[in-house]
Length: 78
Image 1 (cartoon, rainbow, N blue to C red):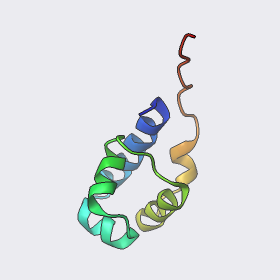
Image 2 (image 1 turned 135 degrees about the horizontal axis):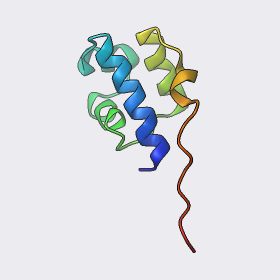
Image 3 (image 1 turned 60 degrees about the horizontal axis):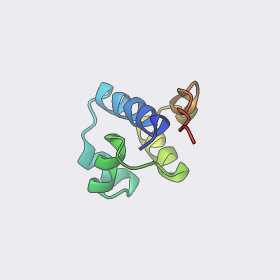
Image 4 (image 1 turned 90 degrees about the horizontal axis):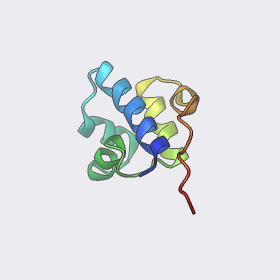
């Protein structure tokens, strides 16, 4: 996955852990399958906007803070 996917995953997972929220209850509350949510939080799958907003709602967090000031994507030489 790209750098932004990893950065977003790290921010979301840090928020989850900071609140002591386990993956299974967050999965149930957001309707995101546990395996999928686990992959997203590890940065191995991208969050869709709707999923990111549902997670932010459950964590009472600002989703915009997770997607601002992301690292610039590295360019691949042609």
